[in-house]
Image 1 (cartoon, rainbow, N blue to C red):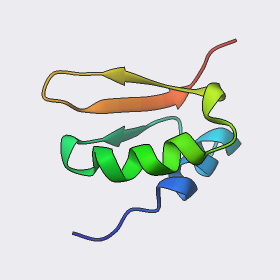
Image 2: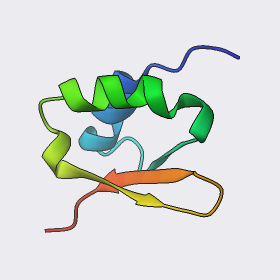
Image 3: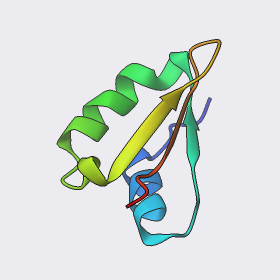
Image 4: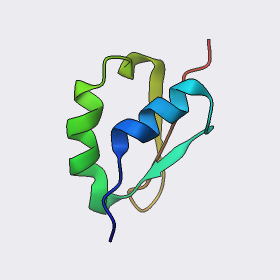
Length: 61
């Protein structure tokens, strides 16, 4: 499995290049380290789904 650049995913989400991205249980721990260090994380929220998947998207104002 290729390493995912979670910071790039967060940056792309914030810039409007993507509308959402999915985190699976397998990559949750690695993502959390990047997410907690991300300075704009308060603008992004995740919604949990069955099976442990989380879909992240920009917060609606």
